Image (cartoon, rainbow, N blue to C red):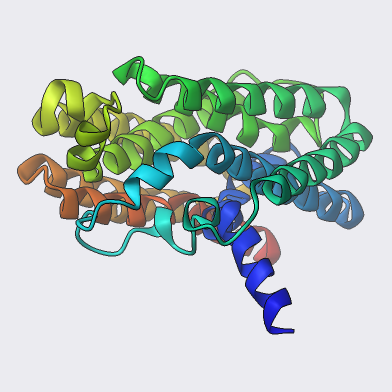
Length: 303
């Protein structure tokens, strides 16, 4: 039993289970935007599909980054503070999971996700495969360009938009457009750039090319904050546009979460663009979509 638990923990770490689980809030919000009275069975299937998809894509990321992660393990001075991105393990780098087992895990989860998405619509399959392809591209650009954060924003947006097309074939230009803008700006300003800023010293030693290693912490903080302003405005505008469904509670949740989970830590990063401040922003921003989802779900339940 102990061995089974160890392997389960290793696979959870390979898929960055904490981040993967939090990430399902993004497509679920899109599901509720597309249909505020979703059929329970379809909602459950779509949620399970995106969970399998996120677990698969995060695993692919660790499989491709395994050589770099092993180099990271030779360093004894990681960024200060709790890092939600590193919650759990990098089992391949730690030698706690065979590489072949990781490949089987990622392929199996990907197959489950594709099969489930196929029942939800071809658009869902296409978006998932496109997002997975962008994940591969992102990893291959590790030492190529500091602007790969744009790829990260695009792949997260594709994954989140799966939720919309699981329930609607009509791409509403206002709600879906605002949702896509929110997701892209949130990922770049709230997660990708701050995470790179937190790892800047380590990345510089390893030859990894990021915005902070090329343009420095201050410019990176400014870019991240600009993205956070866009994400906050888009998220609040989306809640207002969806007010007939989500009501005042959804608007309030979007506004409060934007202020306290994006803008406040973003201002702190502008004032002090350090690894610890960047980690604080990353950790708090990771909970913004789940908080918006909670407010919207509660509003729908109370309606």
